[in-house]
Amino acid sequence: MREQDAFTLPGLSKGVTTLAFSPDGRFLAGGGFDGVVKVWNLTERSEVASPPAPAPVSCVAFRPDGKQLAIASYHQDVLLYDTTNYKEVRRLQGHLGSVTHVVYSPDGKRLATASE
Image (cartoon, rainbow, N blue to C red; front, side):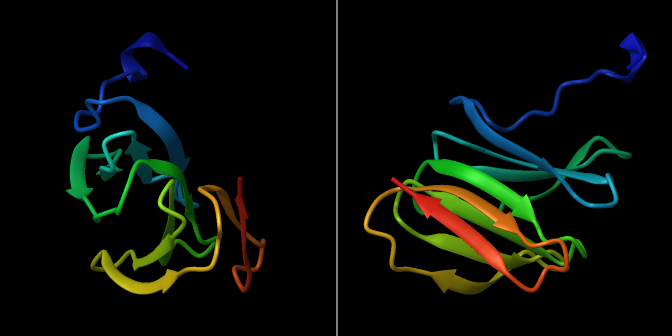
């Protein structure tokens, strides 16, 4: 990486807990201790979305086709957002502890989650 390629993306002021690139590399999603999630367009260096999360964010992951963003929180939920409009499409519940990880299968048909 060249020094002129480095830049700062604003919005996560209470500490960053997770980052994930979209499959095409155009977007970066990040979450923090303050329960804030931001999605930035890296080409334009601008924020494009801030989907809500119920608690401090532990993990974010883009589906391999880039059409969905999974957000895990320390609140025992996983939220799934459509990346065309960043509207919540599903809330996965059932963990008894904080959700610590989310990862999509390579074909995007499955989502694995882990908790404490």
